[in-house]
Image 1 (tube, rainbow, N blue to C red):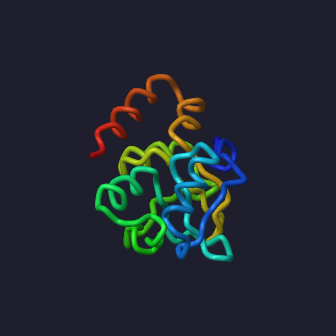
Image 2 (image 1 turned 120 degrees about the vertical axis):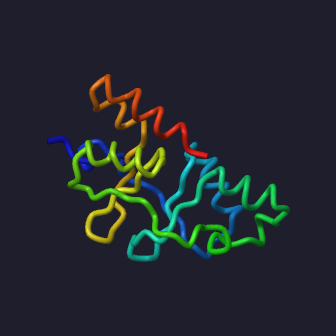
Length: 140
């Protein structure tokens, strides 16, 4: 059984919830990524911010990215994650059910990596790829 730990991207950058949206945007751009986990000092995941969050919840809403903290932007709901030792089948199910393109990988309470849609596509059967992409793409 292949696990999330085996296919995840490691060395994931994170940011503190008190950082500004402008800082998060700079880090997203510098690293050419679309999501940035928000963690406390112990690498406990408290949220995620995406490039879309910044555009929709800050720029389009007329807020100043230099004055808006991530705490003011992130959802107050639980973040969808996967355990490091969970199977990639579980990762596929979670992405399809929750309609997310990326899953932070947790080992205990610590963020240890990220599994993306691309990571899964490279590691699942061809007949599963279409279902995964279709399910995720139907998200609003």
